[in-house]
Image (cartoon, rainbow, N blue to C red; front, side, top):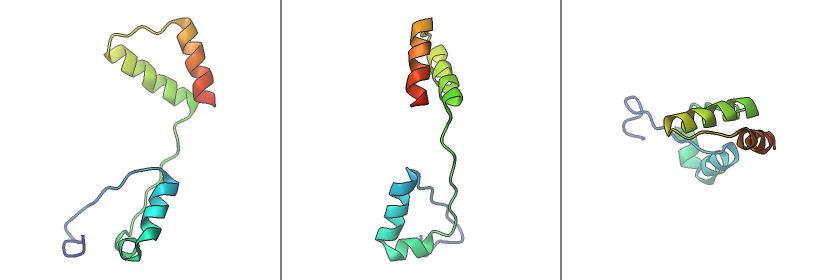
Length: 76
């Protein structure tokens, strides 16, 4: 990263708390990572839509009961 900093992009992805811990654990690493991009968590509706797309791609059929259960799970 140091020698090629003008020509390289490194993507590190993870949960925000763990990524902050990683960067704090090594001061040299923290000084080399200049840009941070955080994304909001998906809401329950988005999670349901993603799950339905996955099911459709695999030819799975969600029952009404399964959808209701998933909506409860995703809202937690």
